[in-house]
Length: 138
Image (cartoon, rainbow, N blue to C red; front, side):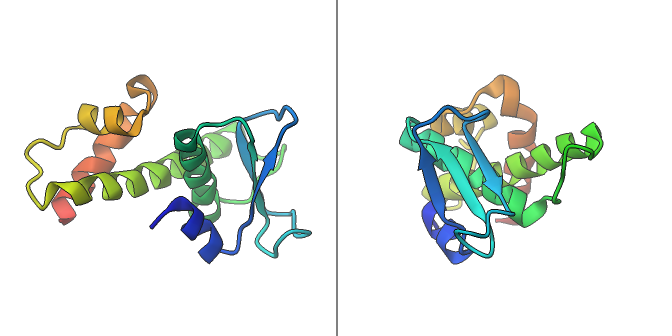
């Protein structure tokens, strides 16, 4: 399922901003002016690949995260970001593995990260965990 379809199914509109944002994208659950489930806002100059990655990450906040504020402990923010990254990786790994027809001998973490255009220094260990889980399930 495409990231746009997931957002649509969750009734979370994706809005684009030409103005500089503090980050490339953000899920704003309190932005009920657009939808009861909030909104995802992205920088408009992102590539299609970046849009997919950011939207999947932000949807991960909706699915697996907790509503935080500036007073929430830093550890909770870090855990929330990790959960959102795991959601994004899980979705992308499922898509990637669909091309292997059940033979995952060539499915390595580095090949996945190259295909997904993700930084191995940032995502290797999370991607490795998600890939091992996905291969063992299939």
